[in-house]
Image 1: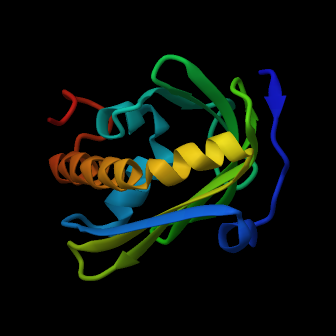
Image 2: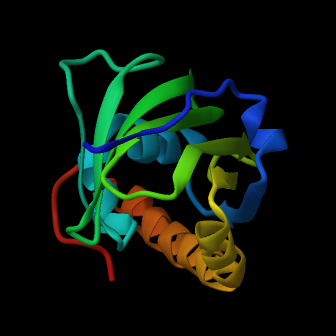
Length: 172
């Protein structure tokens, strides 16, 4: 990949020049949600529409320090490193390399809050340091990012409830 991004620690989630946090509730246990977002990257295309290939680069077990390859829209490629892995609670990663210019640092975090045995509060934070043009695009796209999160959360909930475990058809 052509562009290396600056490494950051988890404090970046609160200090990045561009931040967006989306929240929702899923009718699924936290363990099932964590399993889909952290342990089963191959399922991301089933619930996160822009993703078409997501996988860990090395053999299991995976956790903090693991590298993951991510491809969006068949065009954008990135290598990410897992920086937080707390089962049923928190999953965070930062982009190390990408094939597109304009981003200096990028980190995402998923937080899970068990509300009951069958309901989970979900938070997702996007933290980015980027050039003015990319920042303008991100600011202009806030509503789209929010809609993408909520649509993805609905498909994620469907996948968790189906107990698909990586098999079956993509949820509608």
